[in-house]
Image (cartoon, rainbow, N blue to C red; front, side, top):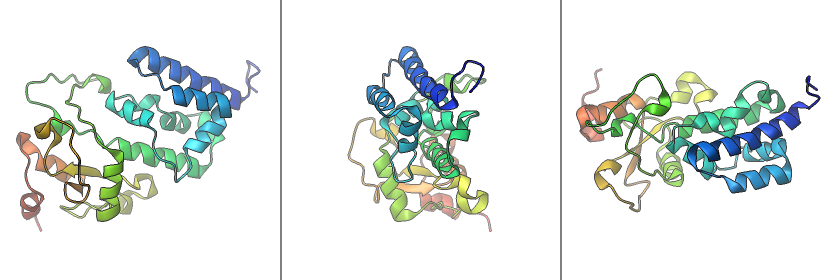
Length: 219
């Protein structure tokens, strides 16, 4: 118990409800199913259910990616003190890996040249937003793996389990050129690439082929 007489578990439950209310007020996104589950199962149990290894990222997490507020996600919450003490190392690992994966959904290369960039606050960077389907990303990685198709770099091999699953997924035809919803083929349309190679692919506002960039690699 802390000075208020509330257990850490109770405080987590209240914090999860407070985040729901804050996100709703600030962004207009009200995660009603999230709230129902928290109230029904209790904050701690609901969080543990969401952090099971085979569970999928919620649509709410993707929404927070779109508005650059991953700091308000359940995954970010459980990784912070004092809440992390309530979770197992496996659950914390799931949270970290999930954040690693979704954080690469948006790419700064999609910023148009005539848009204003404001440094000093992550949430104030303006970029074009095009929906990315997490299932398409999953199938792409399932087929090609998480090594870069250009340089073969693998984050997990270099940085360990904390980087498991982290890789950018490159659209061979940029979404910014399509500018509409379309049915993506995860095998034909997508490729896993590391952030460095992805930046070179789009360097100068162009979209180069993987083969062209691969030919530039120095021995």
